[in-house]
Image (cartoon, rainbow, N blue to C red; front, top):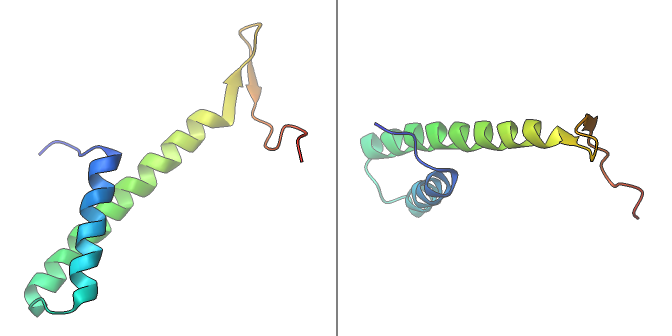
Length: 75
């Protein structure tokens, strides 16, 4: 099984949540949906955390990595 993209995982997670919120699925299916939703949630969280780590440092004009300054002096 290949790892879904972030967008695909989010779409699938939204569908799982929609089905669970309707409340008309059998208990066994609800448990399976919940498990799938937790896996998709973890995948999305991990993907976002990885993206955040990549953005924490930026490369300056001189090629040196510099810490990302949130806000950048703009208010």
